[in-house]
Image 1: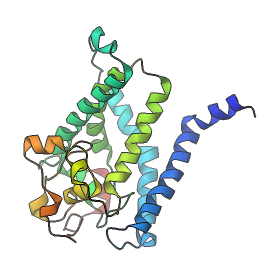
Image 2 (image 1 turned 180 degrees about the horizontal axis):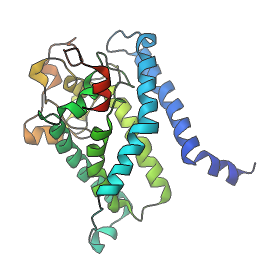
Image 3 (image 1 turned 180 degrees about the vertical axis):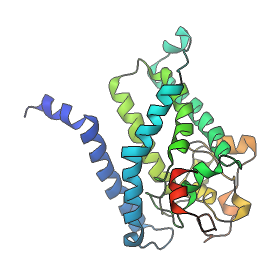
Length: 252
């Protein structure tokens, strides 16, 4: 196999994302073993989360994306926006998509839509795979702001799409991982593990706290920011109630 054929094989989606998953597993597990925020028995939790991950990859995301395609159109942006340099368009994409994600996230914490999001909050532990639980209706809603922002990338280099998909997966692992990490300056802009862990707290006082996905600025602007330093350590994760697992997974 020549270099070109090998390269094309490595960047084909099935191979690329399989290698990415293995790399994420090795990288984040190593970090968690070196500097764990809390004790965690991986063998006790990994099986359920691997099932949840497989369900997300082969059922939840494809079905939600298909539903988005059926019912949702894409906006068009002025030619002046398309003429912007690629780095600027990528930055604009992240700002707009994350702003929309913040409001969709808040929507899923309202009384009516909470049922579609409860599955994501069901783990009683946090580690890098703690964020893979998603229902089809939740994923459908989350996809909307990204689809609306997607035309900003329309003429970007082909590898940009692989990069953005990879960064999205890595960022989800990062914000849920079980690692001791404290960086006040970083949290002024970006969501960190300890920042997002507060969002998964079972304490009713933290419901609706720290809703940001990538940027913390939305929480600060719209009143949902809770400083992790002001939260008692070793709080519990999860729903705090016993739920029907089938209904949780279906989001009904």
